[in-house]
Length: 83
Image (cartoon, rainbow, N blue to C red; front, side):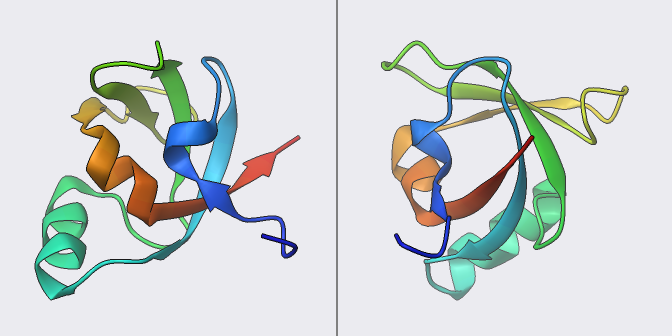
C-alpha cells in the first residue's frame, strides 16, 4: 500500500479519512452508494474496537449520520487518512 491507501478497518477511533476506492463487486458498490459511502466522501471513525462492526460518521462527524459497517465490508473500503 505504498500509495497511502489502507483498508477502513485499520483506522483507529477518532481518525478521519477520505474514501478513495472500493475493492468489491457491483453489489457492494451499490450498497455503499445507497448508504452514502462513495468515492470522495469524508468519514470519521466513531468506534473501532478491533472486533464487531466499525461505527463511522459521515461528513466529518457534522451530523451526516452514523453507520455500522461489518469488518468484511470495511476491509474492502480503501481510504486515505486526513491529517
